[in-house]
Length: 472
Image (cartoon, rainbow, N blue to C red; front, side, top):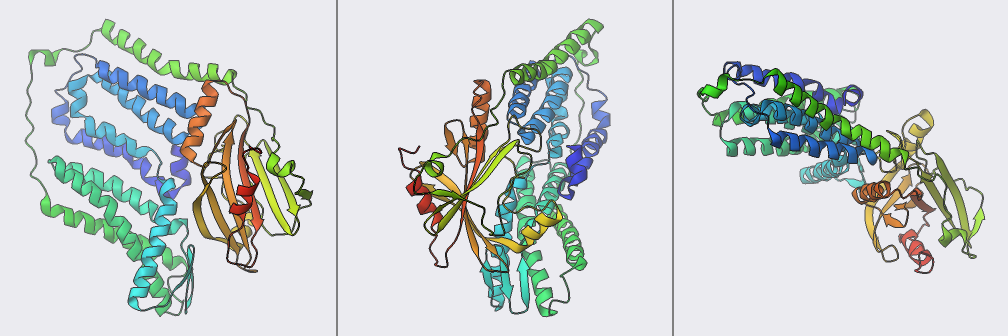
């Protein structure tokens, strides 16, 4: 988690979560000074064990976010078990606030980008400015604009949610007020980010693309976010609750604490509850070795109508990092050429998984890939239903800025005999395979073709005709 906080500005707020939690506890030190662990909580032990099991699941399928949430849960469960129910209840918010450390939310980026682009264009047209849109790119008479990942506003959203949750706890005592303000801290920055994007485009448009197109673009965004946070807190201050009166109800048991024997028993229980999961993980991994072979895809490789040909010069090809084996082949039928890319990640390593946000169609890790990213952009990303696969599959169209040529792309996962395009289902299939020691290959399929000049998409029809029941 710390490595992600250091690497990504989106999750830098994670550094402040533990200090904030400790500060919240310190604020009520007069109350906490009278709290003593009297009896260990078996509910806390169960919570610890459940999170340990969740950590094991996340580790088996290389789902880092599940591992991270489970790790925080194990920390909370350990404290809950030792401190007991009464003491833990007094510390419930500072403890559960620790979940804010988990760097999560990148899955929201495509939806936030879509909202930002749609909202900005709607406001521009409402202003009376003509806009032509292609995917996340849109053109005004004054120039061109693109909505990229940084424009999604995820950084602002996560920071606002973290600060909003903290503010709601400090400012209000009523649960409904806290809930309303936390929801407000989620909705307000999303709307504000759309306004920010609109204002930046308008500044660029009215200045004939002299302003808001360079470093000042980022400065405007940072200043605007600061104003949004200030305004959010200012609005919330109108409904501030009075400070609660803390009362101490000390009983005779409140002065008791654990004996050395009890502390030893609790310590042994904690060590066992924490150590069992890495040991189970090691045992399971020793008995699972995924096949690294690339299977033949019979609809193309064994279809006499399609003949393998050399690689055409389309200026784009799929490529995933971290694979242990991959294959890129092209097949031709009359004037139609289809590309087939298959990637196998083997047993998987952290950062090199079958299901990963790093497996993208436009790469940007080195200079060559950056040029590819700058020359190609999406004009469509959707899901289409395929009768042969009996499920939706991912469909996309990439356009070359220079040649204005399009490439149609379809993607899916195949894990043993299971086929899906859903990331969550793919992870579930992986978990089932590992628990049943099924070593069959896990393959990421990318099938693509150059689109003809007509407006109709053709690749889905080709895939449907290839994937007959006999072929499957």
